[in-house]
Image (cartoon, rainbow, N blue to C red; front, side, top):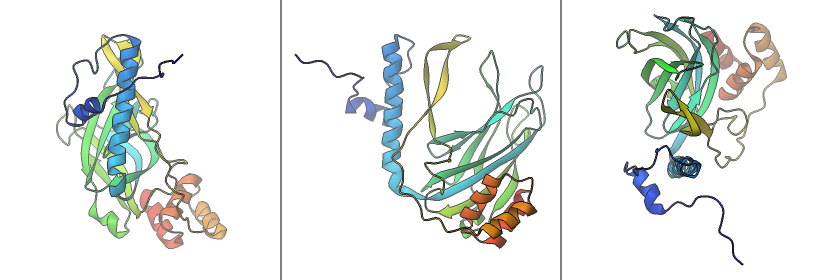
Length: 271
């Protein structure tokens, strides 16, 4: 006696319609749990298909340190709890929330991500995390990737933010960017995983469907060849920068192929 296979099935025509921008009428309809599960699985399948089609066109690793922001206004009754959502190509990354960060939040979040060919800018959005309502988007920017990083330089800059106050008038965010050829040195270990936003089953906030990030698990890349780091050099740099996180120092060492002078220059710019 045969039994039906478990799990939703998706036709190639349904996925092709999504790629061409032709969303089916029932894609985000609030309905039974089976429909929501189907939409979630379809979104994950689409993201995997997009990833597989662009995997061969990755040019290298983009290292982004999201340091801090200076905002011109605190929206809300109490101090804001800001966090950053960063988008590179089709992938999104988030920092942790800075509780009561207000107008001067700090994150010190290091993101290592694959840089697809043809991507020349990154999208930055700052949200205020809310407890009983939807998180509010308070500032955003489309930031061009500096050409200088492709020649081995580390670039630090305060980038202006757009928002309710006007274009470039919502404040600024401090980013440190660098580039290295090949996949991220920590890819598959400590690198921030890409996420795709899909409906959360059976959850509504103020009459609107809420969304939750779902990790997309990719086929691990082969482990990269990491140059040996001198323990003496690492200890000396850690003593020079006692307030810098040791994991950050080690990742900068790896990104600069173990060059002590290059690491010191990069950390001085970050400090």
